[in-house]
Image (cartoon, helix red, strand yellow):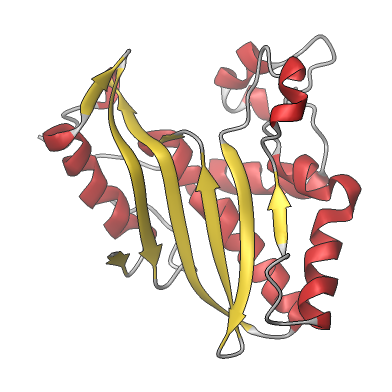
Length: 212
């Protein structure tokens, strides 16, 4: 089982692993069924120089999630890639805050873990196959996010159907680790580990060999 101290260590490791051992799938190199632990999820900055990751944009994405607003009109001014995913109302399915606020999912998780810290029901769902008719322009990459309490610490498991290491993992783990802290604070406990699993962890061809 892979354990990494922080997100940057995981990013650097899998950047090489994908290039060395990945399978070519369409316009990517990919590893299938990849899972690993982040032991210190609060260390969520990507510091590898060749990545040139922008924390200010990740903070904007987190603020957008907190708004619960599915409109991508404002965030697309900072990341134009959202433009191709917007529907006629300028909305996307991949504002994860919008998804986990639907039907009070966060409140449910908090109350369930207060009721029973050993509960196996404390999950947020994002991708939903029953809504696939609404996924023509934007299919969420995250399946679900589960929470467990052990040793009075909140652990988190993120399940991804598809995860681009360069953009997706770097920005997603930043926001997910903040979500873990948000829920832990509501439970008045500390955060524990973060387990990340991707059915398909990949790099697009134009992001290969950046660390040469």
